[in-house]
Image (cartoon, rainbow, N blue to C red; front, side, top):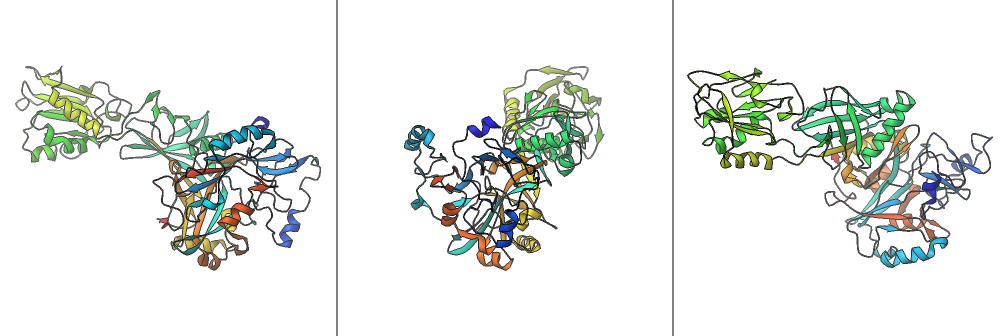
Length: 552
């Protein structure tokens, strides 16, 4: 931790005694609250050379030059400082706006001057309210709950007065839903997922072309052993920050998962997800294969398709082939359970496709019959011709057939891991917005409030409470942290009309214009600005201010 803190040349301003980690030095709080925060630390035996941090329930006692257990706050010369930069979004990164503005530290003045020649400091004249958005990344927290959010920022959107309440939430009730695009068998439903030997989640229901995992959650964070909680928090932080995580599934595969990357299953990187199940693939490509093949079998763990029996083959007047399939027949041309799940053909455990054929009906099948067997992705494909004894003999695949198989592969999207953050916004978050939290919940459900996570759109689940879900790939890098309670730290912002904010009992006395927030917030100390990380908004994301909420 010492090394990590020492490498930062952009510590933020020391927070005053009365504000601690609320991120608003220079802003007077009510006298009663001020008196409470000026009271002596809970541990009266704490060394005078240490500072007690109240950013989470752990209440770390931090020595000078060291960080707390979360690596987010530090003791810098007897003052509590925030280590990480605050992330600001711009519609576009203008050439004048740097990706990172370093601290102007006298000890590193020469190096900073060299950096500033390439990345000049931000010019306040460039600031327009509809071009800059303060995210919760690096903003600090509302804990211990009664404090207003660190930043309550006023701005305008198309002439309308708006307010954005910005904070970092401490989430115990949160998880990651991981969508893994592959036909490979990862593990049975409800099987435990392990990280460094500890159970951190489970396999959930498969969806079309994808396997699904649920990782994290309050029971793994707090309901098990200390090690289970630590490992769960570590895994969740890495997943949220788009880093690779290696897991194992009980009774299943080992895999490496990373948001925005292809999964690695049992040491093999996946290439593509299926275009459809075996039945769908038969139907999609039936017309292209009709004159090239006498029978087509698309092998699939869930629904294996047989062309001549399938409705598509019948509509195209294809003659029956006499093929006799293993498995349980569902409807014509559709078979369940032709093999066990696995990492072979079509997500089954087979390496020899002929093993799912029981035989051929005499008098219907004929010598010379042309048979194509392929997987749902086209990665596995073989061409057979029946001999005089009606035995399939593998031969070189004709070029015309090969082109259709390649088209099957062309229509398969690249295999990808998608990581969705799912969190319940509870007490401390809502208290940082209003003294009457239920009014915030109601306002969100009435589509009066737009909820974002690091500026990325968040889907709000229907029903009670504020349950939000966001794609981590649409959030700024390094958006997630941890506290050793254990819990996840994640950004969240609530944007609404200023009149609606007043109506729901918001902390109006702590609302500042964007210009005032940048000037008076936790960015200055004796004229030295904290690091600000400017990030261009993801082109796929709508601008957070004035955007219609994503409601269930």
